[in-house]
Amino acid sequence: MKRTNNFALFTLLFVSCSLIQAQNSGLIIPVNHQRAIKEGTRTNTGIPGEKYFQNRADYKISAEFDPFSAKLKGSEIVAYKNNSPDTIKYLVIRLYQNIFKDDAARQVQVNAEDLHSGVKIKKLSIGENVIPESNFRFYGTNLIVPIPGKLFPASTIKLNVEWESDLPNKTNLRMGRYDTASYFVAYWYPQISVYDDISGWCVESYNGVQEFYNDYGSFDVEITAPKGFVVWATGELQNAGKIFSEQVLERIEKSKKTDNLVRIITAEDFKNKTIFAENQENKWHFSADFVSDFAFGLSDKYVWDAAGTVVDKKSGRRAVVNSVYKTGSKDGEGIAEIGAKTIKKLSEELIGIPYPYSHNTVWEGHGGMEFPMMCNDGPVDDFYDKVFVTAHEISHSYFPFLVGTNETHFAWMDEGLITFIPKAIELEYGNKNAHYYVSAYGRAAMGTINDLPLIIPSTQMTGSTYMMQNYGRAATGFYFVHDIIGAEMFKKVLKEFVTRWEGKHPLPTDFVNTLNFVTGEDWAWFWNPWFYEFGYADLSLDNVVIENGSIKLKVKKSGIFPVPVKLTINFEDGSTDIIRETAKIWKNSEVWSFEKTYKKTVVSIELGDKDIPDAFLDDNSFTY
Image (cartoon, rainbow, N blue to C red; front, top):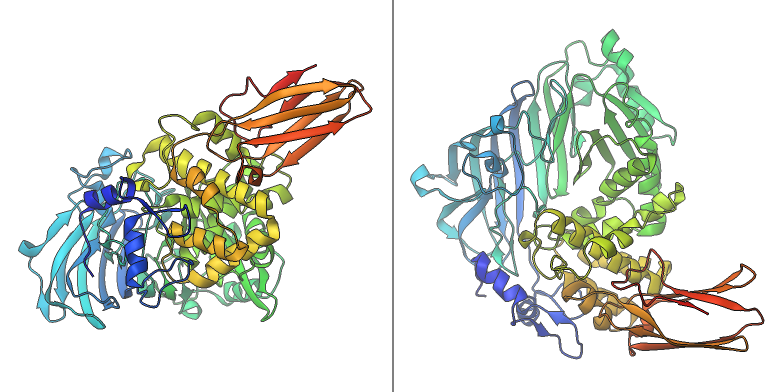
């Protein structure tokens, strides 16, 4: 199987005239996906092919972190298995902290005091062979090293790395310091990139904007921290009994068995020094299997709340959401309960797949960023914003973690779904404008030169364009799919997609082919314009005739985006009649006709509303 590792060529193949259509459908499918179908790693039905593969990296890491200086020292042993049919000649190792090198290509601002000379690799060996620095090749934040003797199919190599890194003290880029010594640590260990059936090695350099695409593996991690600090992390803590006091251990166990809020560590506990065992170990041992990344946070001040719930009614399995936050933080209060409600609703109603992890820890830091079993969420003043960011980041546990979507190339896959799906939770909490992103996209971006088709890799988008396309346009598209097929059918689609691709790496075409399969319909008519083409939505009232209480009119679709039709007919007595059709009416027509007779006098007709984007509103009203 021949592949390219040249990113420029990859982009050209992806978005140029080499785009082709699948047989028996008008769906646009990139040629590299078509080739994967022909080679048997993918299918036209959205099911992984018989020859589908993905490689695996298992990490055993020992690290020492000083939260005061932000200096990290580590060593790791990585067992990397080649499940592909290819002979691999070199490894691509991600050194994400090299984004803070003086000469790094960045699309975000960083504090000048955090700039450094890069991650220092003190030793790197593959098998019995020490790789000299003269053989290192750096490509942005990637380190590329040759494999002695190559890595043949169905073979495993062991990689040993010792490294040191200065983490940022002043810059909060999805991680960082949040008071004198409370620190959230991410993208901190040398990580082997993904080698897949679409582009071979993924060699995109981290520029601070795009997110991540990782293989699955196991993590056995020991973190040495100063005494008096609590560490929270991906995975299960293996030596809690040697770290915490009996009182804290009892509270942890209680949180696993009750639906009530449990305050595991309080400000009083810090004051009274009742958190740790008398001979507290300062080495924290965590273990996680089949996850795609590992993050941790530590603090000598943060308090800890927990709320649990049943996530699998059949087995009775429970999961816990932890809220870890600054003492006295109003934002931290209530997060655990919102999180518990979120994982319950996702498990039972919105997706129908039990929440995949035993816990999720929401750390009060900055912005909003997801990790397996961890979230780094900034404090917010508005209650609905608190619900949004909590539900949004926790919901990412399904996409891209349970299902390993490629956030680097297709951020809209996970961000679009996870902007839309948890809105049901916001609505339940009373936010009447939960779907605000629809009107925001329609006003700010739709149809402009920045309204890039989502088939363009996310790596080619920056700033507000990145945000509006991957969150706004994508979520709007999924919102209208849901509107057409209904909540139960949308849930069936999500459940089937998760079942097919749990622990695997689907592409957008795999999702739409699953949508076609579950609904029994070809969605090219909707999918192509909303996700893959330039354009906009534009509906207009046409040929309105009102005679003797009878209304005859046509709604014309001038833009290429299919959107719902909503007619609000206003009467002289102040009453209204609302007529609504989903976007499906545009599947086979560009004009929709309406006729109805009323016994009341019509005074005006309005087309659309705030949740239906329309590029030109001047032709959306009629006054009699």
